[in-house]
Image (tube, rainbow, N blue to C red; front, side, top):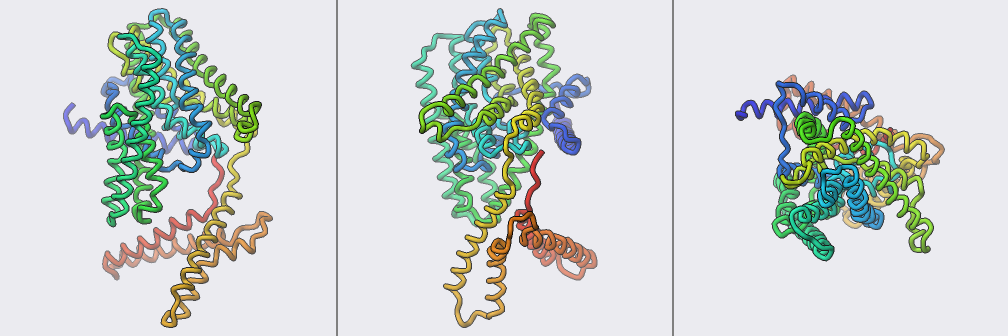
Length: 526
């Protein structure tokens, strides 16, 4: 394909992604499912070019920025607080799924060997960070459940890829449990070590940067740097990217300026939105090619339907059995475990959120060319991705049926204001230390009024459902800002001020509006 045609198709790809995502959001339809369906239909249109999956392009090009974008926004504190639940899912559930689904696939598909069945199970075992965030993140799940799901989906790829590599070796040679365990330890240690090193070095470099543009450039290459370095020493690139992202996200307020943090947040939100949704469209565009290969090598229509249902059932049941067993151990076990246990409802919600995505579709193409029924296994992986995405549509009903408590937005709002009052008190103390006789009283009074506003609002808040003063202030101030922006644009249109002055004032208004947005309570997600 010539460069002009390639660029044209990329533009069309992005435009379709944005349009479908926007329309599905307004219609209340799951954007991932809509994009897969649109891509699947488009794959059968002759004018649409054939899309061929390059596993290395996905693993090295798409996966690192997707993981990094998720990692930098997830709280390292929350991950550490839920580390046992996350490890049990990201390691234990993957291993259990590989064994149980591997044996089920071996029984359901007579043409494959046990090693090939385990390799296929390793491909479909891990949940996908992109898909989980896109499906579960909008449901208003309890914070604990959402943290565990996001942490699991970030870390379980490493376990699955180790199991996949071991299974691939078993297809062509002989392996033993000691070798598999040793490889897993090496990948984990090397991956985490590289992630910590990259995160620490780059945070120290960014501490010394003053230009947000330079800081953003380093941020954009970080996931690729961590991934490539870890892979070069046979470590887990996935763990390296996640570790670096968690560390940099945690240290951002220490090493970055406010301007750099705002720029990084906006850039990665844009990248994450585009890549997350484009991935699902890309998955759909592969349907025609995958289906063609499955028809040529598959066992026929009805056996294929039976096998697909069986594999999906084995996958769902294995996750449910593992999560319920672990939940029972924590709730009924020793006191130390009971203190950290979660409800049966939380366990069911975590079990139901086993959504697969692009990692599964990319990993299945890593199977050796001589793997029995390779094209048919690729088709089954596609079925698993689409099937779990569709099952994710039932999550809202499951959550409602379980009567899980949603995040307490009112309590979170009050906590935010309490913290704001606390830090503003520190600012007032510093002002008192620095005040001299040369400072004008009018300036000092303005500073004290602004800094004490939140604390005074909290003192007078009764909690009876009435509007907080900070909320009323934000609501009215945003209306004033709208009028100020209109006046500024009118002045610019009339040519009464030079552009540098206009740009500076507009930037100040935009910054204040962004601050006020944080002061306005967010409505619960549905």
